[in-house]
Image (cartoon, rainbow, N blue to C red; front, top):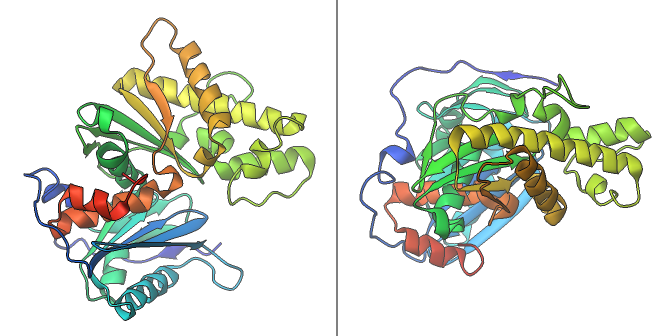
Length: 344
């Protein structure tokens, strides 16, 4: 796979969304029906795009790579430019673009230093996009904006407490939120998938090796000789009841996640653990055994509630929209109204 490596200019820092109205007084303005934020969530396997405005929400999903279009910054630029042009053609006025990306993200400069799920090293994503678009560009870490969405829009009973968001997709990544604000936002924070298992069948391997959606599909294929598409682990968790190989791979993945959550909970004592990313589509097949596994490991200690993300695997683009909403100075209530029932 070709690795994209560009020179990152260490010039003036780009303003973070959290450094503007997020930490200050809540904005009170409301977008017009024509105003909108362009929100992009770049995943290892899927790109989720959304146009979120005062009068509408439209979303779209497409593969991050295709046989004819391997991943590159140019592909992202084209996707975003097409989204902007289509919105304008529909009479929408894009006011902000927020792109959520995986990896070690330098949010101050809008750059990705490294990504294990995309072939990116030192890529100035914000500069590349800003050169082709007439709207302000913000680049954020995908798990952090997802945590922001869940803490502000998805879990009203823990807005005043601590929330740990764990995305289990092409990689396993975590982010924390306290009183609705994301914490530990420096470069490299949240790489939970790099944690190594210290005992049991997975000893010596990382969470990414055992519990990411790509790893689950790959390990099942290795065990059975069956080719499984690595879009998500659906083929594996749907086969758990009837297929011993699927059951073994699934149980080892859940055990590895429980190990990771045990240490995270002991360190941060969150009130709520929210599971997002592609694996959350397994629903109770994931959440129920994960709760039980964490409870066993924390015997004698309080166990936080563990839930599926309110926004499922859409939390990334919702958090990107929230970031743009705050930068535009629009109220949280108006975003809830735009998302509609069941989306905040």
